[in-house]
Length: 378
Picture (cartoon, rainbow, N blue to C red):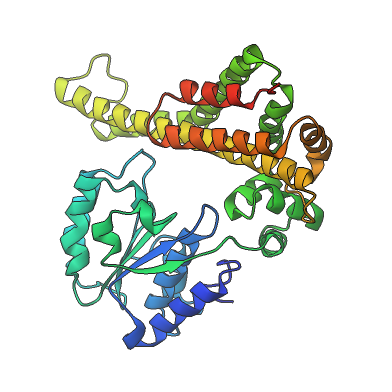
């Protein structure tokens, strides 16, 4: 067993990080791990942190390895956000933390999982700490690509790129780690396009598979503008429902916990100071729900792109396997009813909708524009 076992299909990256752990000359104070969603950036960052703390370079079973991998090591801090941005009030305490020597471990490691969500204010707050950290402090920033990170941060970090892992490797991980039946694991890994987390959810959750099937059915049922508008409404409503289901219970627990800690549980009226704290919590929860909805919609668009990729494969006669084998009939019907040029335009429309969502365009407007562009063209 090793801390690197779940960093699937990333042998070149693992070799670079292993070398840095073992050789001080190959080590640096700031790293930028980049790769597409599902490539395992967070897993690689945590494995690297565990290896840095472990006297054996990442054995996987000592106290330092286990506490790091489970998020309990006192000298390993993981920063992520469920909002649209990492805010300055989250970033500033990290500056002070970075100057402290490790309390128990060999290194103080600060992992920023969503470095692409640092804005100018929060990113600049971290800049000096990343430029001049304490001798035993290591920063590990994670992002989809170097271009997603502020240039001032990426220019001071060593960049290591992760790749999309092979489908077979992801399926094998699902079988060995989660006990998934091999056939189901293979279908889930292919449908998730090697995104380990999504593949695991698809393999274990029939409702997740049903939601994905519903998204893919959108392409076949759009015949005109009316169908497109209805389909857009369905997609956005489903995303809102999924986001609400994912956050509603947690929101209620957080509110109850805050009231309890303030001694106001069950109070008929709340003092102004407590109302202010409740309002701050509600604003944070609203930001989290906004990101959750956008993440669900973005994933739906990625699934649609995979369908149109399959359509293009059939239209061009390429000898490669379909991502959505179980939707082969729909793929062939769409391929015969359109041209490769039309398919490319539809893929462009999906990509543009993803860009608009990332730019804070109202979700319904972005999705409606996309679905209208997906309708059959004469």
